Image 1 (tube, rainbow, N blue to C red):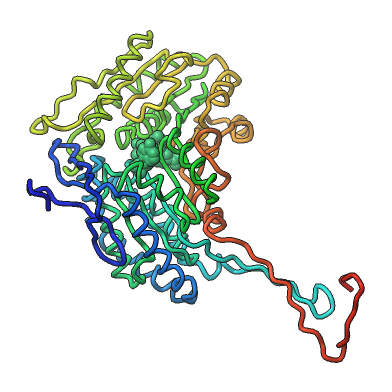
Image 2 (cartoon, rainbow, N blue to C red):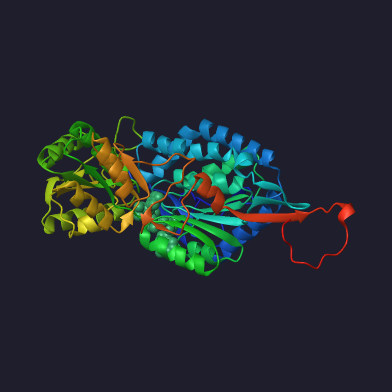
Length: 502
Ligand code: NAD
């Protein structure tokens, strides 16, 4: 607790809370009220070293814990996550602002990765080749890398770390989580659950902080692997810093996701999807739809349907049930998004719905912005080119399927994309031609299940490996192949010839 009565949201090291030694702090607010609810220590390089050293010591023992015992701890963690899901969702809403049903949804999707990781004995099974040459067998195994760091964004404070640590830990690594300093509490709650599930101290740690902590993790000699999710400039920085320090890195960046609506689509379904995917979580999702491409002559009709639906959304404090959209995460971010709306108007886009005057009764200090809808957006405009990360949907008109696909493939990002159509042939051609990592056919937010892997193309990913699923297992392990000869004593004697595998 600080002198001002504001609670400190500390690190988690060696199975307990730790305030660290840094004298720098960040401020945590409730986005619906604007009230300061916590202060978070911003770890120094020295603090990070303390955490990583403990994690390294824990790793050296954890890697030898048998697979079935690791599995039992994962099952116990899964039970605790389910039992405390409501509490976790409320903590997310209090710092992030998203509505509590949405927060519960992210916990539930994250828990699916734990369920996947519970199958770790099967996932780590290697291959065995008997008698590849006389008396020689060969087998492969996958072994943990050591200490893995996860650096995560504000927008999914539970789910994005859950993409990483269940698999990293199941594979025998220690994991250091560096959550966003804007919503640091969910990771602490999760740390308590790991401890209650029986995970040995030090295998899961939380270090709170900002760029200094990130750079310290990316260059620490005992960090072997870095998973990052956040904006593209920071993803590129993390990739370059950690890779040049010899780490394996997966760095997922920003997005500009398009939804193409073909003239034959069910326009009601398409409008429902555009509103859900564009304004859900106030547009603060890396898989949010930010551009709707209306193909042919459907533009006016589609825009009217989207506008009518968006106008009817109930916006308010995410903690109050019944609200569909909450505030933005901070005042600075709200102001940045409002700035984009002004730029869109100045550059000549048609602002069909303007959410800037939104007033929420009794919540004057909140970081509010209602749904904004732009029509007739052109590819050269700033609101088309840059990631806005707020409740701002842009409609671009395209004459043909070819124009629409060209638009998407020219975009530097390649995270998610969707097509809405009733034409199976067009959809099949689309999923083949489109250059993006996650493709939806009549599904606006095609987030892969835990047993597939999540990741984009282009500037949405730096590195080669997507997160979770089998790519996650590969990322958090190194392959080893053993070639062994147990010679039959009857064949003893030196042989100076070249091995011929006979
Ligand atoms: P951010 O890049 O500002 O922060 C992400 C993390 O990096 C945080 O932990 C933060 O402390 C740290 N960080 C911030 N600035 C840094 C710097 N200069 N040097 C080193 N570390 C730094 O992202 P955000 O605002 O928290 O999250 C929103 C962004 O994340 C959006 O761009 C969104 O598209 C992206 N995102 C991508 C995915 C994906 O799967 N591709 C998923 C979720 C969010």
